[in-house]
Structure formats: C-alpha cells, structure tokens
Amino acid sequence: MSNTDTTTSLQESDALGKPPYVNINSQATSLRQASPMPGPKRPGHPRHKSSIRTGDSFTKPRDIEKHSKLPYFLRMHGSITPRMLVPLGFIGLWATLITCISEFVYELVVSEILLTVLGFVVGLGISFRTSSAYERYVDGRKFWAQLSQTSRDLARHIWIHVDERHDADAQLGKADLLGKVTALNLILAFAVSLKHRLRFEPYAQYEDLEQLVAHLSTFAGDAFDPETSEMKPKTSWKRGGEYLGLTFAESNPRKAIKRSKKNLGHLPLEILTYLSAYVNATVKGGQLPGGVQEAMVMVRTSIPSPFPNLERYHILSLTHSPGQPRLPQRSARRHGTGAQHALPIAYSIAISQITWVYVIMLPFQLWHALRWITIPGTIVGAYIILGIAAIGREIENPFGRDENDLPLDKFCEALEDELNVIAAKKAPRMEDFIATEDNSVMFDSSYPCLVMKSTEDIRAGLRARTNVRAGTRRETGMHANGEKAEV
Image 1 (tube, rainbow, N blue to C red):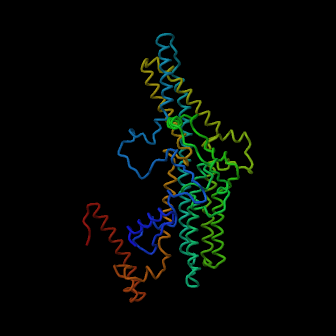
Image 2 (cartoon, rainbow, N blue to C red):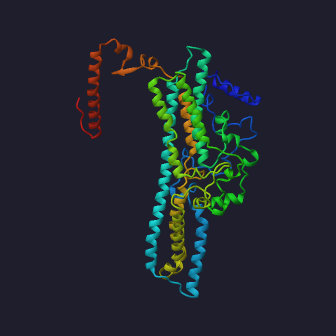
Image 3 (tube, rainbow, N blue to C red):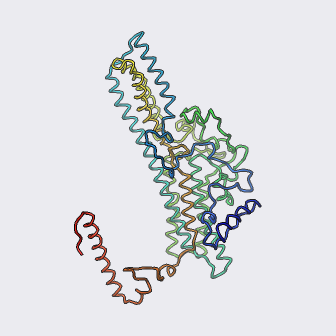
C-alpha cells in the first residue's frame, strides 16, 4: 500500500467514523500513521461526550524548535517586560510625585548611605531567591530527563526480551505482541499523566491521555464529570491581567481539584500498578529469561524514582479529593494556592517587601544629585531590581504553561516518537545483523570473509587495527598543526 492509498484509507475511515486501517506490512507506510500510540491531537473516547482541552486557554511554553533571529534585547516572547509595565508605571508616578514635591514644596532628601546599605541587603536576598528558583528549574529538567531515559530502557527491555510465543500458537503470539504494545502505551501514559498531575489536572479525559488509559479502571477516570470538569474560557480582561502579571487575575491552579465531587486517586501510581501487573504476568508465563527478570524489575522500579524529587519541587500532596484527609489550615495558608514556593513563604514575603521598600526609597536618595533626571533614573533602577526578582518568580515553578516553563508537551511527544521507533520493527536477532555480507567487521572485510580465517588471524588483525587507528590520529593531528605528516 502506498502513502497515497494509506492517506485515502484514513480519510475514508474518518468519514465513516471507523478506526483507520493501515497496512502494517507495508514499508512505505509512515511511522506516524502506523503508530500504536495516538498523537497529541486525537478525538475523544466514545464513552465520553467530550475531552478536556487544556491548551486553548493558556499561554503555551516557548517552542524550542523555533529559531528567532532577533537579538535577545529585542525579543518579547518569554520576556518579563510585559509583567513589568504596571509596576514601572506605578514607580514612574511615585518618582514624579516625590520629584515635584521636592522641587516646588519641600525637599524630601534621604542620605545616600541608606541606598548603599539597603542595596547590599536587597542584592543578597534577590540573588539567593533567583539562584534557588534556577536550581528548581534545572532540577525539574534533570528529573524529567531521568524519567525519559528510564522509560526508554524499560520499553527496550520489554520489546527485546519479552518472548512472543508465535511458534507455540499463532493467536498466543499475536496476543503477546499486542500485550507488548499495550505495555509501551502504559509507559507513555505514565509520563503524560505525570505531566498533567504536575499541572494540577487530575482527570484522565485529556486529549493526549484519554485513549491511552480509557481501558483502565482508575479513580481519575471514574471521577470525570463534564459539568464540573469543563473549564470556562477566559475573558479578555483576565487574559490581559495574566499577560501583565497581575496576581489578582491569576486563577487558582487547583480549581479542577476543588470542584471534584469524587476521589481523584493518583493516576500515575495506578498506571504503574497495571504496568507491574504486566511484568508479573510475563514472569509467571515464562516469557522472560531468568537473568533478564532482575534487570527488568530494577528498571521498572526506577521509573517512579523521580517522584520524591518532583514532590519536593511541587506540592503533589496538597491535591485534596473527597475521602482524603485535608491538610491543616495553617499548612494550606503557608503554601498558598499556587505551586510550592522555592523558599519558605515568610522568606519570599520578606524579600518582596524589602525590594519594594528599596525601590520606593530611590527617588528620595536620587533627587539631590539628579533633580528631574530622578524620574527616569528611578524607573531604570526599579526595572533592574524588580526585573531580577520577577525572573525568580517566573522560573520557580517550571511545570506550568508559561512561556519560560519546561515544554513538557514536547518532551512527551519526543518520548512517544522514541517508543514508536522501538516498536516499529520486530525484536532483532543476532543472525539478522551479524552474519551478513554488509557487516564490515574490520579493514573493510565482511563477516563471511573473516569466518574463513583462523582465530589467530582475526586476533592479529585486531592488534594491527590498533596501530592503524593510532597512526591515523597522529597523522590527523600533524595536519591540523600545519606539520608535515610522515608516510
């Protein structure tokens, strides 16, 4: 079947409301079309009227695949400048008021020593907050990379080492193959569900997750209610307030969790339970060799290892569901309504207050030396101080949907593509890629030619190869240094 025929078949199937037919035996079929794991844009499952859309009402993280030729100081996407407009407007009015009073009414002057003392304290506090927020951002990326690597390892172990019993029975072998594909789907579902949980999206009916877990019995799937789960579109005023960084315009990220009337459970943990059940069934069925079983168990148990770190950087335990104990009111107030602060809340409040005190005191200390230049000078100083503080607040929660957050959607799509590559071909056998004429083992000699030689000749060739490699490196180095190479 050609690519044109495949596309026509997919279009006809969509028109009839049937699952698309793809000839999996055709080498010309696109991997994305034949993917056993659905992509991020997929229709809702038939048993639900609609899926939950999460990307339409939010500003998505910056696309890492796009390239901008503008210099950094001219870029606006991902910049904190829009969030600085309101504070800088207020500071400009404040500096104008103080300057006018000092010029026409009474000189409001403060010693410049206070500027030096407060500047040291403010710089120390902002530096500590920014470094702590950046550490959270880097660690979040590191933990997700660890999760992706472990997911790839487990998928490879399953695809290579779990035996497909085609020789015993054709139907049994087919069931084993579909079971392996289902296990790979569960690995992807775990990453996608963890992404939604980090974003306080507790259900299983999201577009990129629904078809991966629709066949599982989960608390999140049973708790779905279209009336309470449907998120209302944001008004233009609310969008504008969020764009300008106004805190009173920000929604409670746990709104969906608070509206739920049922126990939401823990979807990533439940998916791991089903994945463990699959591994246990393959071990009991004798489909895994004895030595591989231990390696498989080690890889499987290492998948949830990023959980403690992610919980440390994001309050997963604060998600309350009916039937679960609530946190004490004092603890809930300490952590606020959003993501967990990089620092204790008292420290964050103190840094914010000290920073604003310093900025407000600037015109009192600058007027005597700058006069009317105090107004732009105060605005520039406030932009520097408040801008650095805003950067720390911007990156301290890297799991959201802001421009500077980690592109978790792209990470999940990359993991899906990698799992598709693993499942695209049957598990290779040693004789399929070693004992072939195209296998140039050494010195452009193929495997069939070297098989005819003795073991001593092969080992002698291996020793000679080390000398050839070393001589090639020396010759390359002398050419790079402009020296004459020895022949």
